[in-house]
Length: 365
Image (cartoon, rainbow, N blue to C red; front, top):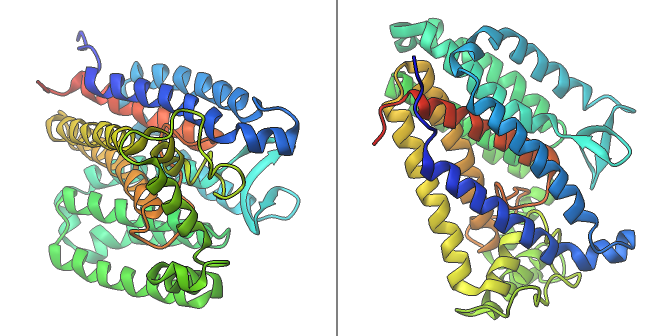
C-alpha cells in the first residue's frame, strides 16, 4: 500500500511555529542567559539542539506505521510508571523551584511527565479499541483505565505537577467519550474529578494563593499577583503592532521564566496584538486539522490516538494563553513548539510525527 504525503497544513504550521519559537526563545532569554550563564546564546543553542533532535524524531514517526505502536502498549505503561517513580527518588530526581520533576545529570535533564502524556494516549487508544462495546460497562470498561490514570496522576501530583495532572485527566475523559463510554459515567467522573481538583487546590497554601491572587492580582501585587500583573503589563504595552522584535522591557527580570511559561507575554509585547493573534490562528488551524485527521482515520486506534494528541496539544496551548492573559490562575504550562524546553519540545514533535503518520492513512481532503 502506497501511503499519501503527510498533512501539509499540520507540517507547515509546526515548522512555522518552531521557527517563531527559536526567534522568540532568543529574544526573550538573552538577558537572563547572559546574567546567569555569561552567554546570551545559552538558551538558544540548547533550543536549536533539542529542535534538531525533535525534528529527526518527528520525521521517524511520520514514516513509522502507527499501527505498530499497539504492540508496545504494556512496555509503554510499565516504562512511564517506573520513570514517574524514579523521578521521586532522592539522588535520581532533580529538584528545581521546589518541584522534583526532572531526571538527569548536570544540565541534561528529562521530564517523565511529558512522556506520560504520550504514553497515556497510546495506552488508552489501544485499550479502548480492544474493549469495543464493553466500554459501556463501568466495571469492565471504564474502571481499568481509571485505575491506571489514578496511579499516573498520583505520581505526577507527588512531584508536584498539577497542570500535567489536569491535562492528562481531561484528555482521558475526552478519549473515553470518543470511544463511546456512557455519558452518565463521564459526567459522574467529571464531577468527581472537579471535586478532587478543588480539594487539591485548597490543600496547599501556594495553590490557594494563586486562586485568590487571580481574582484580584493588584490586591497582592508583590507576591501572588506579581506574575499576572507583569504579564498584563507586557501584553498591554505591546499595543497593536508591538514594541519591535527584541525590545521587550518585561524580560529584564520582571517576567518569571520569560522563555518558557510566559513567552507568549513577550510575543505580545514585542509583536503586539497582531503577532499574538497570528500565533493563536496558527494553533486553531492546527487543532482543526488534527481533529479532521482523527475523524477520517481508518480505524479506532488511529482516531483515538489522533484525537488524544490534538487534545493534549490544544489544552497546553489554551492553558498557557489563558494564564498569561489572566483568564485562569497561574500554573506552570509551556506553549507548545515555541517555549524553551527539551523534553516537552521533543515529545511534542514525536506526537506530531505520529499524527502526521495517521494523516497518511486517513481520507482527508
